[in-house]
Image (cartoon, rainbow, N blue to C red; front, side, top):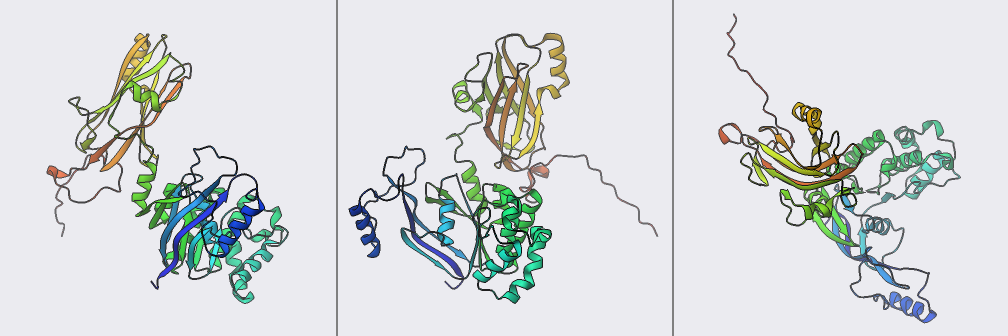
Length: 444
């Protein structure tokens, strides 16, 4: 289609692990002859993918990418996510023509500017000014066109003072800022950005994301953005690819793909109750190695004590945890934290916030035995979302147990008389504050 600017078909990239070459001249010649005829590598193992969990064998060949297919439309901002080693950077290098594919094809319409690592496209011995003109010339721009944008580039990068200083003397943050500014301001049709913005400070990251939005929405340019920052991906991208072991695992709506990615490693058939065996599997800290502090059970229930995963916003939600301690202690910190799918903390509460618990500790301490801690989330506090419960328990010896995203529960909003008048799904909290209404007398 005319508005497709990138079309990737059956794209694959093969690497041989270990020493360079195949080991024999005959094997090298066989691979070269197959490549010249457009045939598959005769030494590649059929169907083999890049699985980092398996130990590499000597001379083994591995597909860093295997059978990648997707299209990108003009003006789209495509996010690419996945674990380290999933093939994200390899894909961008192929799209940027830094390296050639082993199989498949890439069709690109327009000029590409890419920022794949700190200092990409920058000659260390040349000044910032010379590098800007060099990059612009490579992109096919005239000296007059580059000069008209030079001040904007240096201002955006915050490097105006160092325009005539060799780039080798720039800090890593300055190199990233200048590299991004060059890539964004010299008007490429396609902008490719790898996880290099993480080097910059928070202010620059915010400006960079704003600039990528601007060039996409206002100028109709296409952006490919790789990041491990899911909030940035969600804010910026209107489509997303999730990669696994060198293959495209999912492609589609950004929010849906991020949700699948972040929750992929959660326990199967996750329930709003944890027994001791399940706790042993996910606990971090001293739980497995120290018998003085244990978590025996965790649950999410309603007021009647029924274990549930779905609640209405006008219901109370009861959180319970059973903690066992061997020696007598003076105090024990039990912390409940509610987080969203991005691991952003929404609220945190601990037992020591309660006067009842502090009074109990002053009178009784914590003797050896099992203790039940209960926390009540009031009705009309949470909005319509899925929430995750993370748990921490700390004793005075600083022995620390953490259960990250241990349980989840869903809340469905119920409005006045059970009627839903509008969507509150973008709001994570929906507390029922006290309101007043009165009719005012008309004044003449």
